[in-house]
Every structure is written in C-alpha cells, then in structure tokens.
Image (cartoon, rainbow over all chains, first blue to last red; front, side):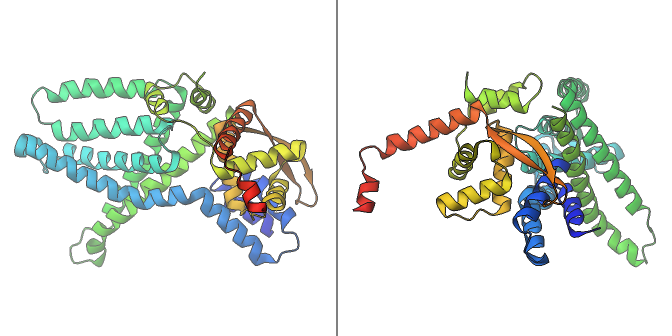
Length: 230
Length: 135
C-alpha cells in the first residue's frame, strides 16, 4: 500500500470515502514536491480537525454520565428515601447500567453531532426514560405509568426513518458494550488472582471506551450513509 | 421564509421534529469571517473552484495561508448549511487518479454572502477607514 492509499484509508475512518479521496488528491496535487513528513503532517492535521469532537466526546462522556447518575441518585433518594433504590435488585442494577450507557451515548452525540442530530432525540429520550424507570421501579403505580410514557416516547422517536436507524445504531452499541462487560466479568473470579483485582477497574475503563467508540462508529456510518443517500 | 428553516429542511429529509424547530427558531444563522472569505474565493473562481485553487486564491488575495484542516472543515460546514454545492470532476494522473471536487455557490450561499457584505458596508459607511489608512 503506497502512502496515498494509506492516507486515504486513514481519512476514511473520520469522513466519507468521497471526501477522503478528494482531500488526498488535493494534498498530492499541492504538495507533489514535498517529502513524506509534510504530507503526513497534513493528513494528521486533517484527521484531528475532522475527529476532535469524537475524541473529546470519548473522554468527556464517561465523566458526565457518571455525574448525572450520581445527581439522579441523590435526587431520587432525597425524594423517596431508600424505597426507590435497592442495590440488591438485579433488574434495577441492569437498568442503572443501561441508563449510564444511554447518558454516555447522549453526551458523545451532543459533542459529535450537535443538537440537531436525530440521534440526540433517541438517546435523550432513552436515557431520561431509563433513569426515571431505574429509580421508580419500586414506586407504587409509578412503573406502569412510566412504562407507557416510555413506549410512546420511543415509538414517536423511532417513527421516522432516520431515527429508526439511530435506534438501530444505539442497540448495536448497547449490545457490544454489554457483551464486553459480560466478557470482562467472566475472565476470573478468584479473589487471589491479580485479574480479579484489575477486572473492576478494567470494566470501568474498557466498557465506556467500547461504548463510546462503537457509538461514534455506528452513528457516524449510519448518518453519513443517510446523508450520502439524499 | 426564514433562512434557518431552509437550512433545516436541507439537513432533515423528513418533516422536522418539534424539538428542532424550537431550537432553530431561537438560533439565527450567520456566516463567520473565514466562511465569507471561502465563499468569495469560490465566487471569484467560478467553475474552477476546488480545494487547491480555493486555497491559492485565498492566499493570493488576502496573504492568509489556509491550513487544509481549516479549509476543508469550512467547506464541509458550508455544504451542510446549504451555502455551497459540489460536483465530482474527472480524475487526473497528478492527483494519483483521484477526482477533483468542484464547488459552486447556491442561492442560499449567495443570499447569505450579500447579507453579510451589506452589513459590513453599512458598518463602514461614514468611517473612511481606507482613506485614513492610505493617507
């Protein structure tokens, strides 16, 4: 693979194929006499310019999602005492984890695709619904009302073609993230093992990273494809 | 028709969401300084405006050296806003068999540019800045 093809492949990771081909062609034309270093500096600067939002989102979203989960916990605990949050409930802990992932997806989408992205409508609806459901799971009558609202809200968000694709991207992200989390939890349960001591830390670091990377990958691809199709 | 609604319709293929309308109504769309420079360069180059020629035109007219990152992100943003449209040209050997992408101003882009330049002209009127500088 020559340097132009390698550069085009790299640029394809952060933009559409047509755009990557155009940019490499322009750089080859304008820097035909330059040595390799200048060419690669141009490619690197283009990659940074086109992907800094994604990079920022990957690092920012775990922090924001954890903070929001903590705020929600404080709010609902103050509202309903211990009756609203039971850490021993497996269902509630799963919902809690999923809501964190949805918050991460929302933050990364806000940074990457800005507010007008249809993806935001889906993730924002999903994370709000999931967080409220997590904390109101054991509230009397609350759950049935919330479930109906959630179903209507998600149906509304997914009723448009773009949003349906976004929902698909979101489900792919969640599936990959939970498979990663499950895989990590199955590595070793021996308390004397060094893997056991590290597994908790790895889950905290690896799962958000996988969630964020897959979010940006799937959504970027799906929204780009849709844009190209129009 | 509100300018922002035209842009919104170009971004969203289906009927816009109420949420987007609410956000969009509160947000007015203005061209930045560099965006105006790029649009003027495209206008000057007419049918031969593509990345390299736009960069050269900006450099020769303003003395400002555009980095590829700044130029291409601006071009992409302007295309997303509906200010410019692109078409693919013929591949050339000099470009490693890759095609050029030619840009042209759309009606929206022209209207935005006229609006921005009119604002500048109104602000400059009565100031005689050019005479002061030359004198």
